[in-house]
Image 1 (cartoon, helix red, strand yellow):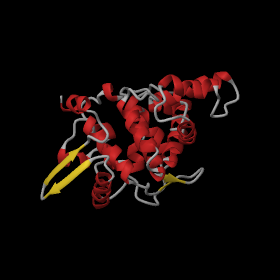
Image 2 (cartoon, one colour):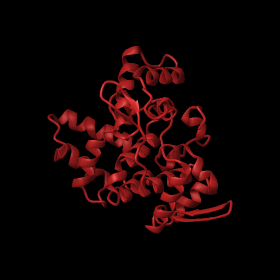
Image 3 (cartoon, helix red, strand yellow):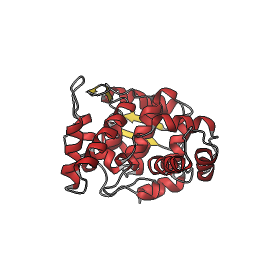
Image 4 (cartoon, one colour):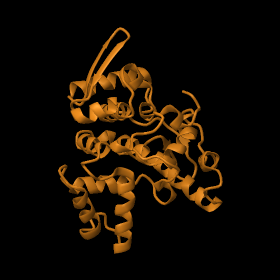
Length: 267
C-alpha cells in the first residue's frame, strides 16, 4: 500500500451529511476510541434508542459507572463525537445494525466509525498501517505524523497525549499490541466489518472494484483474497449483495443503506 496519508486515499471531501467529520480537530486529544465504553453502552440500550436515550443512559443512569456528573457529561460528549450515537446518522445506524450481529468484529467496527469521525485518528494511521507485522510502532512516530500534518497547532504536551491515546486506540482495534512498547499485529477482519468498510467506501463515492481499494478496506488489515471471501459471506448474510464476474464487480447495499442515501452518495 502507498505511504500517502490516509486522507489522500479518500474522496476530495468526506460527505459530512452521512456522519463523516473533517478538519484538524479530533477526540484523540483527550480520549481513545473508548471501545469498552461503547461496548457497555450498546449492551444496555436497545437498537431503537435515540440520541436522547443514549445521553440519558450515560449521564442520568450512569450505565458506564463514571464517578461525577461532569465526567458523565464529558463522556457523552466524547462518545458522540466519535460515534454520533444517533440513528439518524447513517454511519452510526449501520454500525449499530452490524454490532449485534458480529461480536468478534466489534473492535474493527468501532475503529472504522471512529476513523470516519476523528480526523486526528486518521492522521496517525500511516505509521500503523505501513508497519510490518511485528515491527515496533513508537508514540514518537504517531506524534510526528500529526505535527507534520497540522504544523504548530498542538504544543508538545498535547502531541504526547494524542500519541498515547492513538496508540491505545490502535491497540483496542487490534492493529497494535503491547503496553508501553507497541508492535504491529494483524487485526481480525470479519464479514460485518467488511460490510461496514464497503458501505463507508460507497458513502464516500467509491463504486465497483474501487470499493476494494479504499482507506476503509485498508483498515480491515486483510489481504485482498480474504476481503473478497468476507464480502461474499457478508452478501450471504444479507448485509450487501455481491457479484464478481471476470473484472466486473457489482455490490449493492440495500441491506444497510436507504435508497435516498444511495442516491445522495451517487450525487
